[in-house]
Image (cartoon, rainbow, N blue to C red; front, side):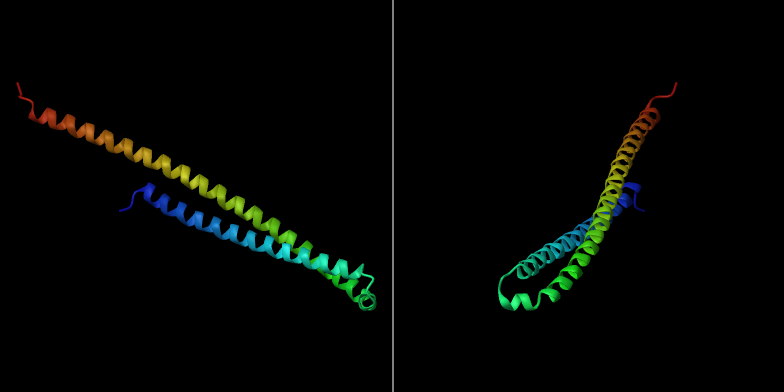
Length: 130
């Protein structure tokens, strides 16, 4: 049968995996926002361009810029959710790890106490009886 500290060690490993998944999702959202920011810059530059071809499409660029800004706001919200989830998962993992260490200390203390009691029992059982 597994000890409490072994069970908590497994929970810590699972929790750390969940934390890494949340970090990965956060990184992906941040990457998407960076790509989107570059696209917004390109569209804004095209809108301000003096090139005749860009002037023809300025209305299209304006509507596209609006959609890109909305998408950026959406991704910002998603990024904030991922940040909160990552922090929550990290806090859970830290708590599990602390509980695991406490459980391991308690198990070690119990084992030491039992070994001392065994030594006392052995000493008393081998002592001459009067």
